[in-house]
Amino acid sequence: MKRKLDDEAKYRISYINWIIIGFARGFKRPASEVVKYLDEYGGLQFLFDNYEYEHTQSEIRTHNTLLKVCRNNGGYL
Image (cartoon, rainbow, N blue to C red; front, side, top):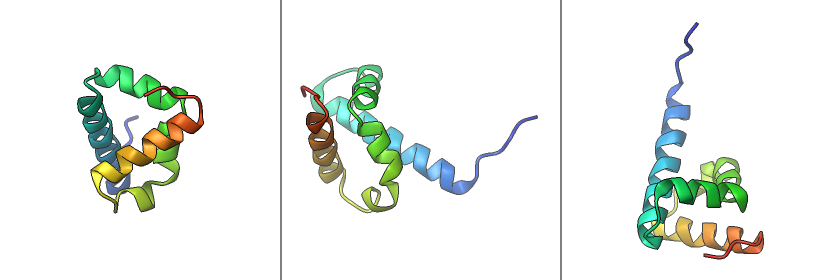
């Protein structure tokens, strides 16, 4: 049986996808590599946990916050 996503889930997925694509462009990396990086260093979990606040911020601010989160967890970008 297929389940439909509610509007909130669709907005979250779209937002996180948009952030990942912008992050990938900024670092000239493939999106698949960025997803692995963010997952490994806590960035994806940060986005999921803080969506309510982060989606009200600018893209560049969210990218800078992700960099800090990932670097605090051993990231190298």
